[in-house]
Amino acid sequence: MELDITPGIQKKGIEVAFELVEIWGSDHWNGDEVAYVKPVRVNGTYMITDDTVVVNAEAATVIQAPCARCLQPADISVRGEIEEAFLRDREDREWSIADEEYHYKGHIIKLNDVVRVSLLQELPTRILCKEECKGLCPVCGTDLNQSTCSCQKEIGSRNPFSALASMLNEDEEV
Ligand SMILES: [Zn+2]
Ligand SMILES: [Zn+2]
Image (cartoon, rainbow, N blue to C red; front, side):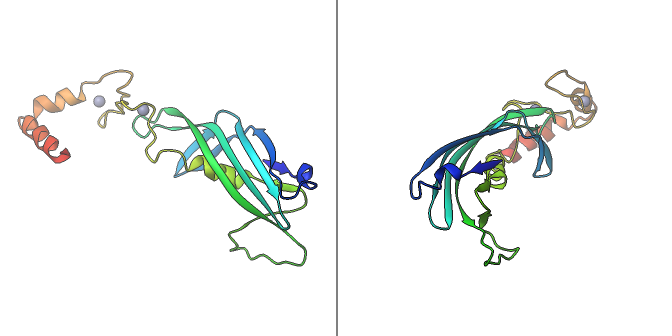
């Protein structure tokens, strides 16, 4: 995702509006495979000063990620805030790899990294397809949103202490 700042070169110190829309594919986040299922939209302004371009924007898309309970794909609308300064790369300056600042060359600012992180960090730590998702049966793996299985009942009838056990479990959760 590249921001061309050519229109702003003659407007130093003035905020210039921009909009970028790009289709992104799959990605990885927190050990999950995720996908951008809507185009990534970035709306905002940039302002050029002597050696720095300050970008203020909002990014939005829909990210698909596996539900933590049933593993079915869940679509999550995310909005990220971008407020970042990009320093101009110059021939006479050497940057170390550990440098944490963002840089740009020529008239193009590569926004991929800042947009990506601004969106992905908005994902909930525990992704659910729906709040009341019943998840998978821990015994047979049946998706309990779609059908039922008899595992819970069988465990219950075989174990005379199950009623007591579930009472203890309820206590634990309090
Ligand atoms: Zn689910
Ligand atoms: Zn089951």
